Length: 480
Image (cartoon, rainbow, N blue to C red; front, side):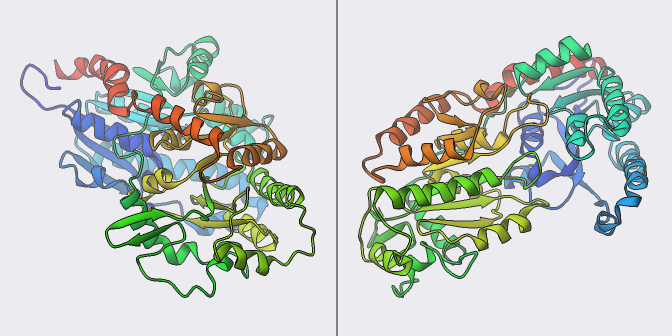
């Protein structure tokens, strides 16, 4: 997009968070550079590595801000009100420094919300000072997230909502992630927003058998390392002595041929931010229930020796219900707490691994798994989990926590299932994995449905249709 004078347009993407953990804003940057032919500055915190496509694009320039010092996070609760005031003030001036002085003047700012304070205020000030337009991409509501920790009746939450509402109305355009959020913004906030559903970019796709084998070779050491003293995955490989690259927990290579092991564990992936809006205990309870229910169905009593069971499985014995290996990806504040809970579990047929994968390996893992589980509940009830979008892009069906607008994404019995309790999730695991790997028709049906539904919509297509017209509209003021 360029004006009549031939000037190349410029956009600034603003993320008051870890850019590597903000996939939607990375995709915005790529689309602005590729599809709108703009120079793109990204202002964000460092931390996790962004996708290689973002890092290597010649028109994308990343400017990294300094993180809020961790020393302040451990202060006594008595200082919390002071920190709640001090932190956004410092962030505000840091943002203004980057927005007004560190980058060339943009024609449009695109800012992620939440967090709303101080981001929306800083971007609004910067857009006025630099004669730029600004667009808000509403992922959720900041005041509802703050309410999780402070309570909805907190005075801080009320002030936060007022600021979010006031500055939200000042934007030149708005995008949002669901029709439910679009309705809420229109009815109760007086904001007209365009729905841009999250869609996977092209690098989220089903994983080939060769890619699976190479991935499992890279992850082999981590996958064999139990969180506790031993489990059905590490125990099942003890004594085999085969740590060669031609064999992994899931695959075997003979010459140039690669095979999936018939007695492999079923691989379940759940990505979590380890925060209060995702109740991870639901998954732990469901895992315990699966373990006990399978033992009951197979008439195993509590005295059945787990080492004996694991040796039988490693020797090739197959049961009507498989072992489950849950790989939990992500970073967050409650990770260590739940890892300790996992260590105290004594499960015969279920194992857990926690890990953080590169932006390149994460899609490969999703495409290699048998089922995805999503525990996202939404503080507002109006946003959709990006992790499920990614799963669908890789052809992976998902079981997700049920809440008000989740059916805008998860179509029950077509590309996934919904659950409200740990018992319901355990029932779904039993139903989907009975007869694994070859006899589980319900799981195969969901996978086929996911592949069919996921083949049409991609991020670039949706962005071209819904976001590009809005960007063109607000840019016209500056470029023509």
